[in-house]
Image (cartoon, rainbow, N blue to C red; front, side, top):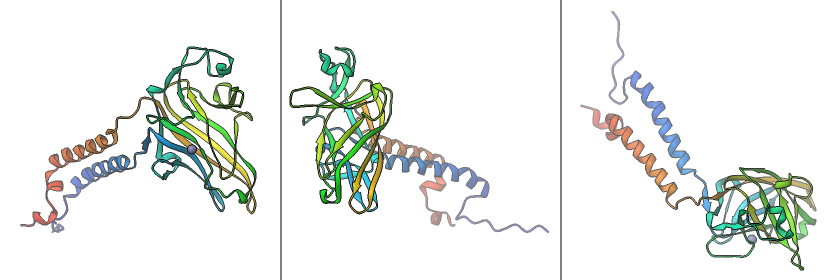
Length: 259
Ligand SMILES: [Zn+2]
């Protein structure tokens, strides 16, 4: 005589478990993704941050205004549509393109409604380093080109980074250990970008140290403030719908299923 295993009310029949478990896992996967969504930084003083903790660089996003730091992949720097500006007349800005062509321009002066974006190494002890740090733009991944420059004492442009003519030895910016600097930034196309910087310097004890960080930026559309919240609510709704369809598993605890 065939003996059947006793049926437990604490767990659904095996065939339902096989169907429900992957769906439940996918829901939790989406919840996890929503909860781990990056922070969008749209204004305030924010720096590409370069610190050092023996034996490695600590490359990060430094939100100076709110006194917080992020791994480069955990924050998105936003340059909104309000930054769209025609390229001025004159040879000084010819590296950006033809005069009158709109570009997204983030100036190196603080304004309340946009990022004040720079490079910060103030967490470094200058006594630990020989000479300046070298900051090289080693990668630009996005729909357009990235530019950064400042002006000398005579008002001449000093182009620090320009992906429009390819990346090479010229795409380097010197940074003083323990220092801080702000450049003008521009992008010629809207969209999502990844900028990779390589920082290098001569550490007094550890020798030459090289680190890299890939930063996330979005140019053009500013994400709605509630986007992430709506995403979480949407996932919650998905769970609710899932539970209504699988009422036994979601709405009641197994304990209430006992006769
Ligand atoms: Zn700064």
